Image 1 (cartoon, rainbow, N blue to C red):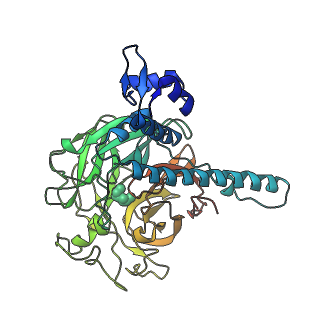
Image 2 (cartoon, protein in one colour):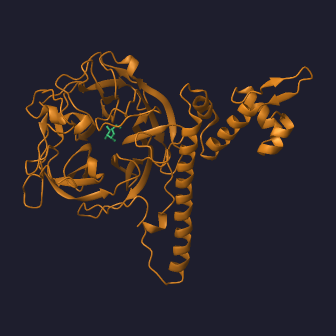
Image 3 (cartoon, rainbow, N blue to C red):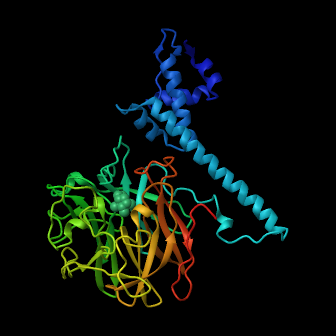
Length: 447
Ligand code: FUB
């Protein structure tokens, strides 16, 4: 079956002007153009246009759609399955909004009491939609919010619990002038091809500031497949950042958070399984070929904690040797390895509130963000509770930041990709913190 541009326009609901524009940007070219200059579209173009419309419906930019459709591994069957799953998610969100309005009407009549959290159910949309972003580290620099996320890439992924599918190779920096203001993509800030020692897996990063310079800290596999932490420097919070030729001596594992504590800068890091923290239990790298996590503590043994080191004045080296942070239970005992709903797994973050220090982290395979409290930035910390319940997707990862007198939780989920674990998107929500530091647990999709 063949169609003229007018017929295709009528059938698809797109104007002929739009179809011509798609041709101009090489998104959808006609099968042929006749001598009389009629544009003729064949079955292949009709099917491609259907895909374009599905992707547009899901808010993909034309640029991204073009890249997706022209990828050598584009699979129409798989794309339909993904469209279906994303449309279900969209419907889920609409259902939540309908429920929110219905409850609000009932609450207005005084028939029920609606919590503040319920009032926002269904509203929380991804912050960035033109690319996949995860692991937000957020800081306030020059009165703006700067977001340093991981950049998730689309590829056919295998899942082996070692994190192989998180195959990231670059970082973009984002900023927001205010809460609710547009989230600006400042473009690529650092790429693996410019880092001489790094070979793969640019995972969760963070940025520190000292004496007019910004220091980007990022993990990556070195040439031996061992996670190390590198630094890159810029005069501006949005970069671009110039990487150091080698990784920070003595660094290992991944998931980085930097705390500026009155002139002293602390780096926190470390993660289990694909994060390789188990390999460093003795202080040295001990290779292990068994099942992932099998070389970590088991049962009643104390769980592994994240590591911390003070950064030297140059911000490019450690002033102190990395040490483990202890997380204790209500009896002052270290959390046990079997306590998987509370023990540390990855995604370390530290914030200060009311003179105390709060360490928050993901419990990994049980998918919570929990927090613990201490009087010192180096611990020991005592377990306090949960910050965030599980989100759509396997990983849960966050940061906590104060901005203009309010507290915010930045996190990610996989709603934009319809639940694909390694294709995540940033979100944020206001956080309620009581005067004694207690955080009200966020239920990301309402109660
Ligand atoms: O983004 C890759 C990894 O997924 C992060 O480093 C972990 O915290 C998890 O979010």
